[in-house]
Length: 210
Image (tube, rainbow, N blue to C red; front, side):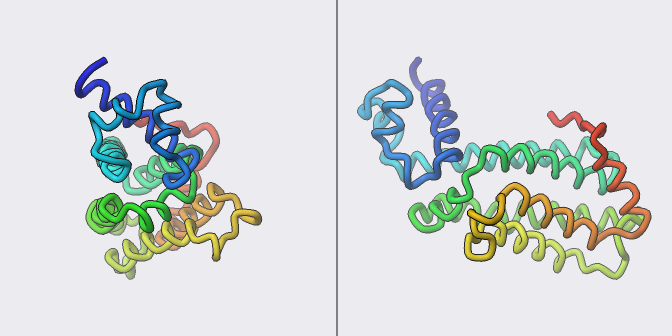
């Protein structure tokens, strides 16, 4: 395969490797060996590993943005939107090495800035919109400040990656993220909202997320 198709295939495989093993531990030699291609071929598409990590991050975040945008359109209400996001998070967490974001922050600042922009704009704006809709529908408490809660959500997400707070030998990363998410949602909800959220958490609830 040549051109864009080859580049996309490389990025797809690279993302899977990074998410499984972390970014720092995977070398260009590892990638070439995994794809059964030469390093020369890799360098025809990417200037270096930093360039590859940046483009992988672009693809990942663009895909995430589209997915969460689709959820916002599909969801019948603010509670279902959060429930569908929870399902997506669980799927993502199953394939994510917690060291990925740490590696980006320490070794790939350009890619890290992309994640920070995504966090500060896309996630924050999405949470604020969701909370405002939930307040209007009576599912969330009217005394909540949406902007404060959006920032709180970001802090909770980041805290789960902190191995000092949640040592890997004592806590499962997936469980930490799930419980922090539930804590956040329950803190927002009125009694009406809690009942609906519990309904969506039932095992037979299987949302169709495109």
